[in-house]
Image (cartoon, rainbow, N blue to C red; front, side):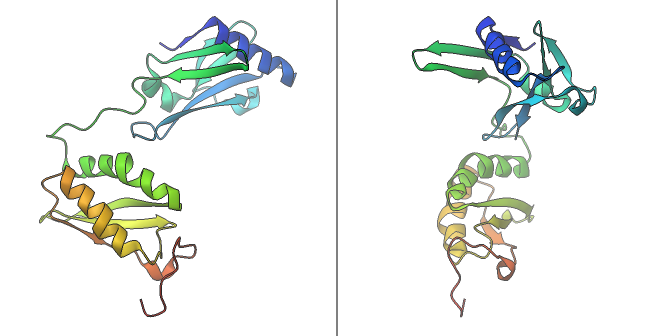
Length: 198
């Protein structure tokens, strides 16, 4: 069950009245659910933009619609609007949104993905980059692919060895090393340009 405080309902009502569109509602969607970078997204949704699969929460003159694939992640969520001297702040607390840290008996690939999403990718995001898991060899070597600003970056090798490998080996004893499977020659917007002889 998702709860919406009276102040949040009033806040949404005023926003909808300003739009002056019949049948307008608010849509709530979980973005990147189950990962440490999970967040909630609120947007207006007109009647013609709904497909009928949404969970509807009536709020008097309008409804809040929760995307069907977001519902389990938003279980027990609380939406509130806290008034202040400068206006106020809308808050959404969703305890299930980010999921749980994988248990020790979870597959190595899931635990590697969790460390990538929770620790490594947030750091690489400052350079517009990210990595993703390609595979893990039977010997425990994690094979990765670089994307965004890390694809074709002249510092990718250092990032791989001094950042990614160090972090993965420190968090997961089964990881023996890392390998880069990225074709860096095809990267078109690297954060640091590669040297001509690299």
